[in-house]
Image (cartoon, rainbow, N blue to C red):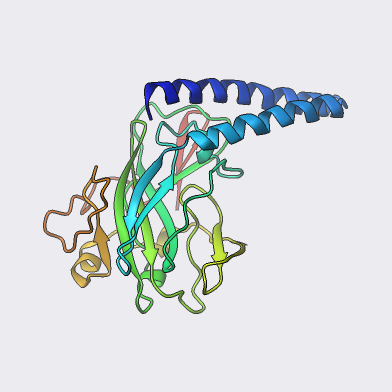
Length: 253
């Protein structure tokens, strides 16, 4: 984000956070009309915030070669994009037909941003979900995405839709989109985050060709194979899921 965009983002969030509190107080006081007017302004601010989100390279489809970019708040975890229960996100560009899911992980730096809401950026190190990646024809792509002072990673899955296999929640949310075989959106489903379902030992997946990776900072999204030169192996960090709230971090499994 440019300095101008960062400044506008900060102004929008300051006003939006203040008006959220005001709208709630008005509602609790029985002043529903005034509360609704304030909420309309919050909605306007939210839409502008979503427009400011930069599109970031997160993958390239291993099957079609199509570049995958996603609107992500890379300024910090205090952005509404990262609000677990009600994330404010601009609809991403149309994904390749074989796109399945995108989850993520993040190594947190101190101090962690203060938020009034829950933020769940994932474990400290990248991982794969074996139940998805073991499916016939499915491959995954790992990429690094800085978020403020933190180091994030996206793990995107591509291939034929696995039968009777639950996918994984979108990075930082508690749901994932459900589509038909033609890619048409049908609704939302939900997975339960559980580190016992994850595999942090990536070397075998890299050797098999099931997992590909993108060099950090490579916005062209060039796919690389194998363990040679891969910077994502054996990274230090907790293999537990981080929860950020009010400037504190706790972990659960």
